[in-house]
Length: 253
Ligand SMILES: O=C(O)C(=O)C[C@]1(C(=O)O)C=C[C@@H](O)C=C1
Image 1 (cartoon, rainbow, N blue to C red):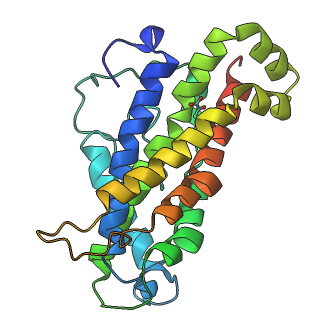
Image 2 (image 1 turned 30 degrees about the vertical axis):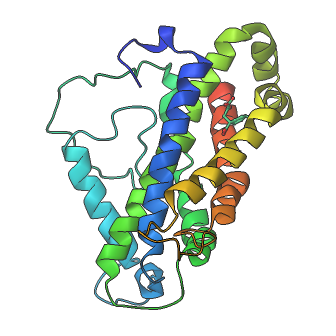
């Protein structure tokens, strides 16, 4: 996101940002896929010394430190545990557009992102096994979760730009609280198909084994490209659209 402010945002520039985030998402998935599932880290009854799972403990602690460092000050940065975060110690203004209408601040699908990632997606990404190195796995999970969340909450900017380009049609549906019409207005099926094709292709290119001779199997990838496409199809795109609808519903408040 550049420093030009919301007035100069275009659908093209936001889509470019989404395309850039695809690279980060794939690389973070490749990192997590190197480690075994390590299921005790996600089990809230496994470690008796504290409340909740080890993953929750580590993510809360990391988010707390990052909040002090000035994270979570823009609409696309949403913590997974917003309660009791310490105030930032860094007050320098962000050199990126953050001036979305107030509607943006309250749109938050973090819980849904956490739930699908931990309960549905991670067991498909990581091979069964337990190497006891839970903190490393969770650090890798948080990298995945944060970039997925950023991508999904970027839907706020997408929705704002779409609202500005067709204000009358969107306003009518917002006044009626008509979620279906909003969903239809913002959906572009051709773009969705391209996004899914591109992410699968990138997973093949970024995830291929590089060797100096030609003996490697060209169908061996570090993360299954069809799983990455499925991630977008089942979770990333639908949740981005949920963010867009939720944002729009509050846009005229
Ligand atoms: O690019 C857009 O227009 C978006 O709204 C983003 C997105 C996506 O998540 O990739 C979501 C909805 C549209 O149907 C197409 C793509």
